[in-house]
Amino acid sequence: MREVPQFGTAEYQEQKGINRCKSCDEPIAGQYYRVSGAMTCTACAQNTARHSRPDNNQAFARGVLFGVGGALLGLILYATVGIITGL
Image (cartoon, rainbow, N blue to C red; front, side, top):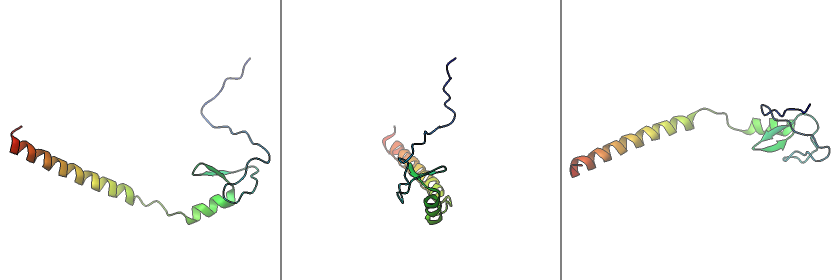
């Protein structure tokens, strides 16, 4: 009987001597991480995590604020044009 492929989890084939950390260029054996899509060793991944800024949701709040402001400005402009032209 044929083996049925599964698509729920990724299974990477380990290649000896080819898998190298993109940060420090050391060979990777066993556990590794992906940082921006690049294969990275545990030490470099932890170093990257320490130097990155924590997520504080300011960008989301700013996006919502500007979105609501733009919607109100568009509503005012649309109503003004409608009132002036009578459309």
